[in-house]
Image (cartoon, rainbow, N blue to C red):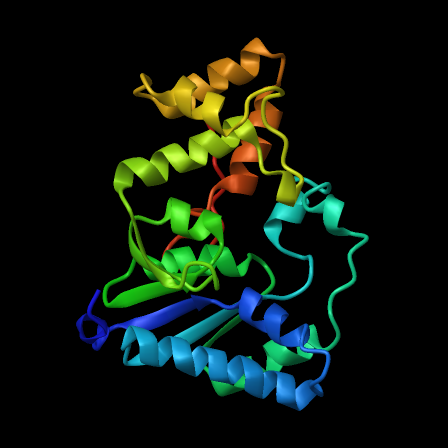
Length: 233
């Protein structure tokens, strides 16, 4: 994609990974880490050709998903955050427009902003890129490229996750159903929600378990007023 096509757009960045990468630079002090992150952001802005940028970060563990399920990301509790991580996020938030997110996660607001006109999302999170329709910029060092997600692909991605789960976030779907089997199951389905609920019932999972997983995995639960609207039947 020609970067000049983005010159009227605002770059919406899921920036947690940028702050994390900067915090891992052990040979730098706190302020140098901020400069490291700032250079990365400026490089993104130059590369994509956007006119402006907004950075979104998740702060703490107070987001609504921890209330939906207290075991959400419990498998990460033993992990120690790299030094200066929160400081880097706070300093970058002073330098650039955006938000330090607490009631919801950065992913949620990035997806919401990414639906709006004249925006380009930059992320490396599979949930953001996988569930948001349109063309986005994947800034993972192994990719660093534009990726396009169709409406069909975005819908299938969510329900495929509902079946296979997400071990990184401690979300458990259907035992024995990995990515391949989940995708195969959904191939001939029209109503994905109904089909996946039938599968949950078949293995003895409750409606609460189904809705909990859906509310943990769905990236589209913020309305235009940034209010959280949970899924229901």
